[in-house]
Amino acid sequence: MNAVAAGFRLQLAVMRRTPAQLLVLLTTPLFSSMFLAIAVHSGNRSILTDAVFAPALMSLWMLAVGLGGGIIGGDRWAGVLELLLVAPTPLLWTVVGRIAATTSLAALSLVESLLVARLGFGVSLTVHHPLLLVGTLLVTLFALVGTAAMFAGLFVLSRAVLLFQNALTYPFYILGGVLVPLSYLPSWLHPVSKLVFLSWAGDLLRDCVDRAGPVDGWPWRLLAVAGLGVAALAAGTVLINRISARVRRTGSAAVA
Image (cartoon, rainbow, N blue to C red):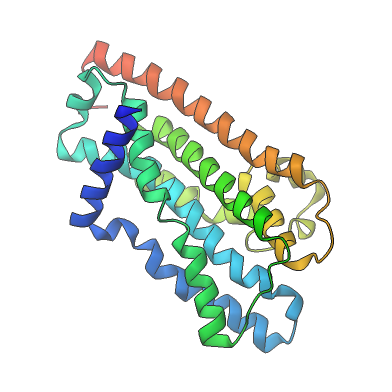
């Protein structure tokens, strides 16, 4: 836990000096305005919830992809990756701590969307299940940390990080049901969508607002988000540990 805390403090210091890492928080209000304008002027009140939550979920995924690649790529560019690999503390826990620091600010994207809806369009959402909403947000942030750690393991040996980051954004907005409901996708894509934690998290967040009555199956749906986060974190652990061992053995961190 000391390594995680150290990574957390390190990332906070990095963000103070390079606030561009949180540029995604500047794009969230723009996406919110676009989606809300479409929803309000179409007269379809049923999609207002989607218009509010979609930009926040997009920001979460952008942070997961950007963090996973940015942390390792930034360390390699700065010439400190070798030092982290030979340190007695496992690289994984330092990476998790750094991811958690930025993830803790990710919830601001939802606050931004709500403010844009209320102040810009006069739209106020009624949350029928506030406790479930908070629980869903916490589990979603955990899944985000696990997913970002997995990406860190996938990107650690690649110099084409930006290429992978671009390829892993908009396709997953569709697979996660962020831009369009999953019911609009071909049936053969539904099992693939269920492997993306955004699909479960997005449905739960919408139900917390849209359903005045009980939310069907919320315990196992919440467990699905947590399970995907655990699976991603486990994959990231295996990848980072194996790749770190290989890089230490070959001395190829700077030339991989």
